[in-house]
Length: 258
Image 1 (tube, rainbow, N blue to C red):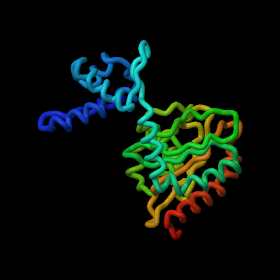
Image 2: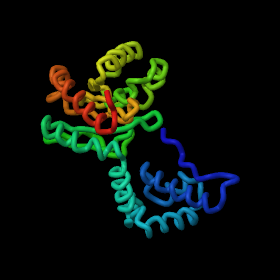
Image 3: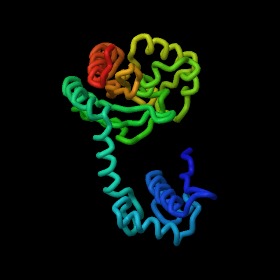
């Protein structure tokens, strides 16, 4: 369940509270609120206050409004999101490597980082196959069920791994118990590679690897995904070496000497 957006409280300066309420409106719209009643309920503010804040956000293009459809996220957020994506050194450095890999394998590629307890997608290359992987840039996915998420935590100790297991709902048909999942994580850590065997989404599998910075710490990961029609066990194993090599090349461009 999504947490209620923070709108400030006692002791918050008036200007700061207005800012927090405006940000909370954006979060509420992103979560599906479309009308003033829904926004007011999410923020705990009156309809008049909510309307004033929403109107200002529409004027500045952070929100859109259409009669009978309600509020939506605006083009200004797309602009800022694109700028933030391009400003990320990992995204900028990784992109040409991932484009070459995508051209070679034809599969969907995701790039992501660990954000708190979730895997956050920074980039997506859809590949050439006529399939749709239900993911998008800016989306957060469970760590324990995604190949990318597992790759992000390969360096953590087993106690930390346990905390990620079953944290966040996954839609996959194969949900290993803790003992099985930990055994797989130990293998992945030794091999420097991770897999998703239909754990996060039905009929979708992937192979993933971590990306390291100059100090050797895992700062990102990427995955190569497809439907099991194209990504069976044999193909995942065949791709593992190429995925590792690509991860190492990106890491070296970030200053890693390994």
